[in-house]
Length: 380
Ligand code: MG
Image 1: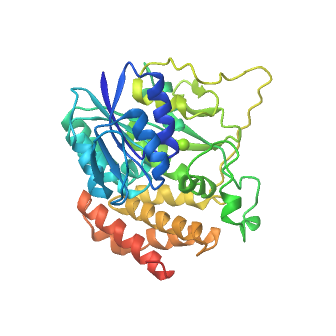
Image 2: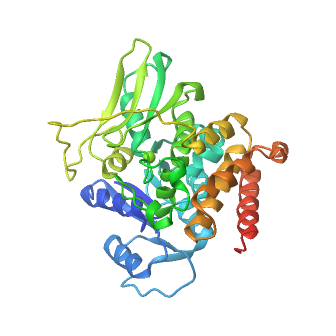
């Protein structure tokens, strides 16, 4: 039995992770869960899986049929990350935002393998996380369709023969609009993703293409491939989940239906491939399209490469500016295109050069940026 901890268990990735665990209940035992605002949903999940330790967002009453340890807030997440029950344990991080960083760090230091859906962890602190993974001798597997696909395409191959990684992008909810047609778009329009059903933050990040920028940075850290060898391509059908091109011109692609259960199961049971609940992809009559992903149309993609190459805390600056901007957009404080401008201004500010690249500075600078941008628009 492998012990499982899921932080962000009631979100989109969290509930799909629980589906996979249900399928493999003979392999996995849920030990700890953190749950979001919806107490009714939280209670249902808790009663089904009966974890020993649960973390709720705020101090609130919850009536249960048994007595688990109950912890709260960000501090509670760290308690879940450091809880220890079984010899082999995996920590699924499905949190959204910079608050996902420290739980990953603490879980690694407590010798848990990591299945990572929280983008911020590798975006802001990739090199630090990599050395922790190495020092603690644990495994980290990605829960993201693109990185899962790349991991598949690299199986049995020699990394020195990789010419480039090609990350596919669906184009998000505004892919059929020109830049001019982005003026005045609403959050309701932005939240309608054509292919994937995801949380609201990541759906907006897909519409701005910042999500793809984050995935480029994550891919660089996950697979040790230089940024010059990581490309992106527009692929509206979301059938090719990503590709790896080798020196001899061979391109390996991982293709399949757009269902997150597949990459989740692969991350939990890597390198096994035996999930049964998935609808298989019908290849007959399939038509696939690939096109340039224009950096003029999607400047956030360019910003991600820029911040990544600038290094230091700049990926954290990129992430924090985006996190604040998306929050403001979802709360009707700014227009869609203001998101790009807010990020642009922040990553071109030279003052972040003087920050050290360590966990402390990354968190401090991120929190400062998020609160100062929000304050600028009258949000506390
Ligand atoms: Mg993705």
